[in-house]
Amino acid sequence: MFDGIVRFARYSSGHGRIVIVRHYNGLETGYAHLSEYQVKANDTVSAGDIIGIGGKSGNARGSHLHLITSYKGNYINPEYLFDFSESNTVRNENLWVTKKWVTAQYHGSKRQTELELLTTKSLAEVSHKEDNRKKIHVVRSGETLSGISDKYRISVSRLCKTNSIRKTSLLRIGQKLVVSL
Image 1: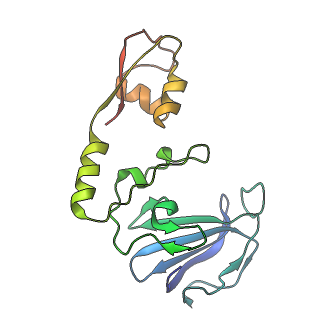
Image 2: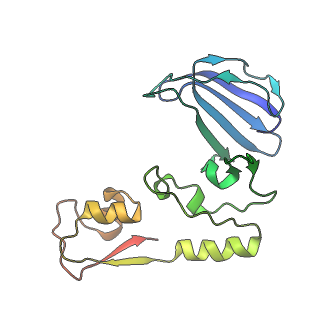
């Protein structure tokens, strides 16, 4: 993706054979489930160099590449940073990253997250305020904690903790639940 230095090239129980490259812009990219390494720790790599051979090592059910991106310890959804279509490019030279793009529960393989690039500080501030606004869900007939947690992409545990209720609590029609902070 970019020039950098291999920080880590070894086996991890979940990711199998993994290579992590720290790039000169501070971004780190990880390439997991490899079948073979082509680099070792402290190697200098250039964009486009082969760092490993794809595979299914670790906790993988089939051959694939698991791409991990992080900046200063915060994992970022790679879809936000890179356009994986035919153009295969970085989406923008400057991108502001908010909680939405570092929180895995907002994204999933079943539902594509709407992509909104934040290319200026003012756009990021507006988005941050919207993300941090308290959202309330009013319980309707037939709803369950599990269904509500799926809808808002938060865990049942977090939903219960935020609302000071138990997983076994009965929901009442019209009851208000805080679903994000």
